[in-house]
Length: 266
Image (cartoon, rainbow, N blue to C red; front, side, top):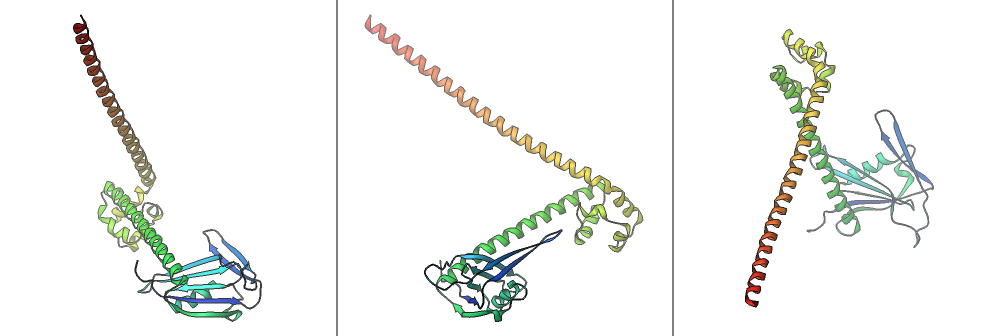
């Protein structure tokens, strides 16, 4: 590959041990907090440089995406790598637990690096991070496209396909259409009372429609599996038949050779 991109690197050491690194994980129903306590040790051969905790964050809103990696080692040393100096400091401040600030750390080094371990580590991280995020975006886009097709097919069966662009622009799919109210449709400028009533009355068919689609998909998959098995069986039968024909021809050839040998012996 070519030259590595420069990386902004900050190395800090906590002034007083132990200190916690807390990770807050939001969930739909509650929030989990994981706390890691790091106790600095005197630098030496026994001090491990392996990260105890690794945090990564990405800002995709800016024209140039900013990626930040924070490694907290078991010896308490904190290493921050980023492709932007402001993002590096901001990422560090956001990761620090409540009650802990930059003043609680001694800055051992700070600056841009163009070679060495920092750019190598960050280059690998950036490649993996962007690949994963792009993969997630592609998966999300495929899911949206699938949801749009399902809504369009359902509306087409009702004779209301013309509503598809309007509903999709409002983020409506087969799940959310079941909780639409008449006021929602009026707000979306679906003015015709008959159209609104038809759509609202047809909501009960959504579950049946999805079950029917799942049944059809399952039957199609089963039919494809059976067709594949049938093709394989036919190939095996043909191969066996060809092998049988070859064996018969070889036996006839050997019988003819034996008859000729006997005639010569007589």
